[in-house]
Amino acid sequence: MPFPRKVKVVVFPPFIWPVLALLALPLLVLGALVSPPTGPVSLYYGSPLKGTAVALDPGHGGIDSGTHFESTLLEKEIVLEIGLELRRLLEQAGARVMITREIDEELSYHFPDGGMARHRRDIRGRARLINASQAQLLISLHINSIYDGSVRGPIAFYVPEKPESKTLAMAIHENINPLFSADAKAGQLVHQQPQESSAYYILNETDMPGILLEIGFITNPDDRLLLAKKSFRKKIARAIFLGIVDYIYGDLEPEKPALESR
Image (cartoon, rainbow, N blue to C red; front, top):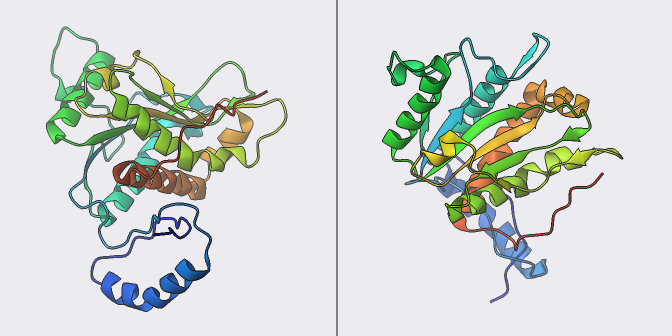
């Protein structure tokens, strides 16, 4: 049976989707008849993520601002805003979501150990919360920085010991890359591929497939301009959401060669 063209995710509240589905049925049938077969349908409505449990970890918080640009753009604030919007989208789609923080706070109090530095207790407290959630996947949100201001774009890190984490990282990149590559300039290195790394405690010490997503580089003027916009942060949350849906439904194309270039 030929497949119609791929359609991006559409999410409706459960109480209205039956009516909307009936109204849209003639259009879907017509589209199937006139559209060339290019791949499977990715049209979801109602509660596409019902039964899925997701752990979200907006990095830093409290006295730990993370990376920053002057005093106006703080990593801890950017990732919290994106995390809360992502939680809203996931819950709207039926997922159960655990988020490690909802306010500007660090989480060392979840791992009370007077002999350990606060930063180490904070990361261990996060891992404890995430494992207790029994989530099926983890998204840890961060903002990157580097001495080279020409480097930009997202990087999803995963540990090689968890093969499903690479699949999740690829799904996120497929959806988030276009937000950064559309306005790439000559001479910029725009990251567009996930990277394996065993350096992150949060990925090594949690039980489920997961990624640590460095959303962009605050040290790059173009990324910084985008990250400062609330509208762009909503786009980031939606792109991550779409990536999670693709991961859950296995809606991934074959891995492509790296597109990073100077």
